[in-house]
Amino acid sequence: MALYCMKKLVTILLLIVLVQPLFAQAQLLPKFIRKMYFEKDTTKKGSFVVLPVISSAPETGLEAGGSALYSFYTDTLGNDTRVSNIFAYATITTKGQSRLNLSSSYWAPHNNYHFTGQVGYINFPFDFYGIGNNTAKANADRLGQKRVRVTLTGEKKIGSNIYIGLVAGGYDYRFNDQDGTGIFATDPTIEGKHGGSILYIGPSFIFDSRNNNTYTTKGSTITSYFNMMSGIGGNSGYSGGFLNVELTHFVALSKKFVLGFDVQSQNMTGSQSPFYLLPTLGSDEMMRGYYNGRFRDRNMIAGQTELRYRMSERFGIVGFLGAGEVFNKAFSADQLKANYGGGLRYFFDVQKGLSIRVDYGVGEKRPGESRQSGVYVGLGEAF
Image (tube, rainbow, N blue to C red):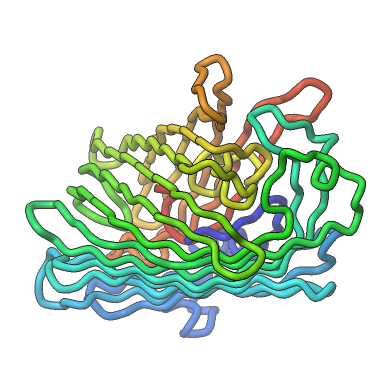
């Protein structure tokens, strides 16, 4: 539930953190603001929070919007049911671009079933650098993108901490290359330049022993799924698959320190390689500091560790480091890229373990380029 914030200016968050002690005690803020961000609720009632977003870039002009999170329990009597949520995000720019997203995670009583759903729309430009683990910043090619995405998952608990289920969904991608002289147009190895429509379905297997799904202090997860994908319509003859496996583990070092580990592998199967389906390195959750899509190829592997320090009920800090790479066929340890960084946490819902996070990640410095880095603002932990 993170907001993608490369060079975003989210001043409202800084104001909340800096003036919280004064306003919370002096009752200077409206009641609904105090309820969302400052008041402690020990009941199991639903909670609602909004986070405004504002940013500016030459290619978009002014971008404004926000996100909203509603969190709730499906069982308010027991203590084992995990927190469910509905998350919405929307922004629009002065140049007519927009991003919309609605997602939900639903945990049935006693966690016997878990369902997720997501509907998203993007009409937004992005930089395409080519394919591979060593693309050059000088090759950045600005593309227009329109994307519709629908994702559904459902899992049933079949044993202690074990779930099996199905994933299903679809994508529709459209691209616009106004330049026509950059790497996107001139590289003949790039597949799927016109975009396409894809439907997929497949099995999932999950092991989940976390003590909490919002702020985990101990336990592990294994999340795996395989998407059997097929193109539909006249412009997409794609047929292939996508395998994702992710492992996490958390250790409570003390009452305030938690050490987390996260390893993820993504692999495209089949003979075709539409560029928009290739795994990418860098996001607000893994390899923070790298522009999402700067490096992309048929396979991706990455790992990270994060040390979390809960200074108080409301505030925490983290430090993280990791490494990862994309590759076509053969993994090479010599090609691993490193990242590191830190962040702040403000827990607006102490009882549910829900936080606003601000992370700053740093990546590699390639010859002739400035060091890669990124700022991320979002709701909830990176993993």
